[in-house]
Amino acid sequence: MNWYQRVFVPRLLNAEMSSKELEQIRRVVLMDAVGTVLEIGVGPGYNIPLYQNIAKLYALDPSKELMKIAKTRAGSRPFPIEFLNTGAENIPLPDHSVDTVVSTWTLCSVLDPKKVLREIQRVLQPQGHFIFVDHGASPNLFLRVIQTGLTVIAKYLTGNCHYDRKLEEFIREAGFHIERIEHPRTRFKPLVYNYQGVAIPSFCMDPTDVRQSK
Image (tube, rainbow, N blue to C red; front, side, top):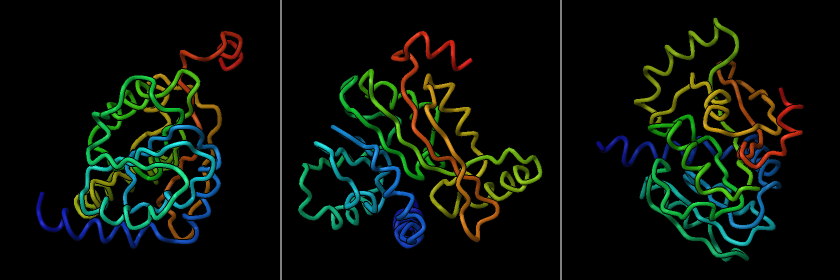
């Protein structure tokens, strides 16, 4: 990892993810987090002060530099926090050990999103929830072509960020049932197509729900 990726990108992400618009999105989605929580890609830790009724937080990120920043935002929270300095492709937790997995603007940049989603499925309790917010491929073909072209350059400058990943498709293929999903607009970013929702492992669905979802 070169100096740019190791030092500059963490500082860029810390500044980029600090907007009030993103904070409002965080507040809304984190209301669904309960019990023992794993956050993949905790980054600079902007979510940490916003968790409310949780029992414990595992804060995972492969960047030591971002983790140092995140720890400054941990403060004296009313729940224990365990920091895991590793990637989400191999989560160092037992099977079915967490109630909620949170991913905010992380699946766009992990090395192997399909493997990460399989790992999320593995560590979730059968009745657990996967809360996600991210940006990915637009359903508009013209915009998607531009997103793919932009990704060729952006992934080297912004910590492997991809604008064109088909995240909803990836989540379903990993064995999740998406309970709800929406695509909120981001001001001043016409090339960003957002995904925001909650998913559960498909194997814990009631057979009646499966028939109704077809």
